[in-house]
Length: 465
Image (cartoon, rainbow, N blue to C red; front, side, top):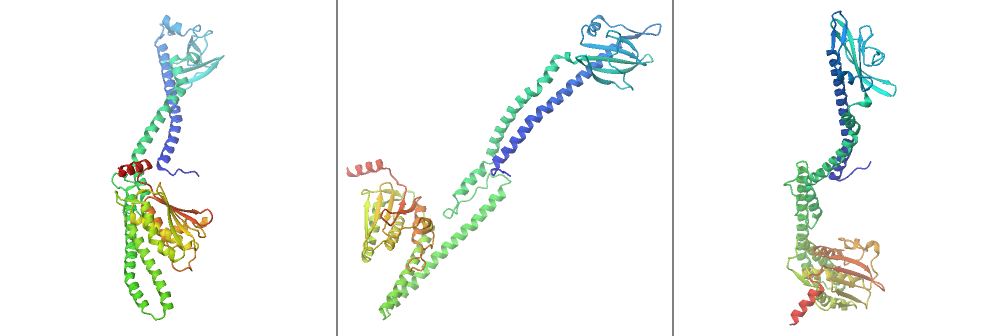
């Protein structure tokens, strides 16, 4: 069964169903009420007509009944006029007086009992509606019959009853839909605090665990849920803080034993064994340093006025890693933009990200090849190697913590690229990997630039002056 997920949409849909039903039922109910009212008015009019005829019925001195209708009233009931008719019947059903030719009764049979009877009958093409009113006049039981030709019913009542449903229906539907529009505006205003809280909740993540949903102004029905969510976020933030503190404390505590271990390894007489142990200690030291970097990144905040020059950062990294590359028969080169490429960010953190990308490239690139650092003037740094490349299925996984394709290979903990991804996230940047033409991989760190090209040109011209 189809169900709307939005509270607003669900409420509006239910209101729409109610409006459609109301726009049909309300005119129908009003039509029935009006029709009933018109019928009651007609019944009252017929009874008043019967009473009026009785008022002109009198007892003669000889004991017979006489009916002396005024001329206008007699003309109203005349058969020539054809709109109304009356008859006065005796208790035995005989017709005493009648406006119809042949002294006929209006209705075929007189009523039995003392209650008035309303009837509908057809005479030729005419439809008659009338009343048979039993009375007692001067000790005699009589029945007064009055009828009206429905084809000549009061024109105003006829038109109102006939056109009421369509007229009221067209008026009711727009009014109800206008109320729906007003209702939607009211609902949206009522749930606006929930929408604001929902937008704020989208920003809450591992990097922004300090955010909380506003409880002030929240609808009473939602307040317990918002309060529970905020309490859960408090516990989550405490868990993240404990994890960061544990990682940082553990890394700091490991530095001293590693330094002592290096000193003791240098005292071993077996040089080959000492070198093996020294390599293991270096790997452990690298892991400890990376753990400290991860812990530092969790609390790192970029200042609003901090800027970094990607060209200077790349040149510094290349100069730092060039000896390591040459020692392994490889090279590091910098190309691309010559002038400053300024971005909003921290130079040291960006240098760490570029250094990790270059170190990763030096590990995987082939001997006698060059790791190239290319700076784009729009704020992107690309690091290219001539290694085996990265399969498409692994391009998202390589930026996860402790992920390694070959876990048997020593010297890597799988933290370098995750540090790059976290630094990029802190800078609002994006890191990606693609295949390099001719073999290898290209890692690109795209950082939003602080200045556009025209701004940079104006700055350079101003500096030259």
